Length: 223
Image (cartoon, rainbow, N blue to C red; front, side, top):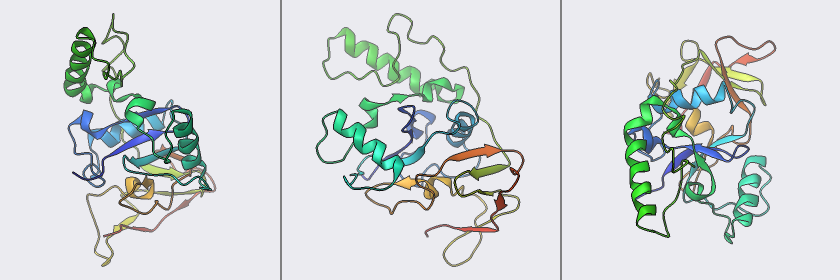
């Protein structure tokens, strides 16, 4: 079956799922440029997720107790609070799924909420309110937002950024990719992959390069 990934905000205890936007949830199934899922992420990064610690988290990830990465350390502490003993965490039950904010997730999220409402009607003890809805007004405030595109993806910690117009995204053999956004690879953490080079850094988006930041000339993918 493989490992499935979500964009997770460890500060806000929220996440968005590619499944809700009708994309595959494996590591590289939703990293093509301009897709609705990444556009939702960029909208969040320009609003309520600004300045927060995020990562592209695999559901098989086990976090070591002595991790020095701030983002992973928060996940580990949350896992202990929830009673997990092995350094794993299930964001599906632990955090709020905010995919429901976006118009492009409406079809699947409406269906998932309908299933949840039916489950609680049938007294299903395993039903999970992943979108944290009010069961009396289940769709209030949902599906109102559009995703966004920005010229630059910014690493505020390292004071660098990249742009598809000016940064080469390269495969290992140095051929150029014209359709991949490397952010999920830079911010990824899972059982099936090494931690990304930017994991733990504060990430943002903008249409201009912040003063004092350096534009990267190239970024390498791991294939």
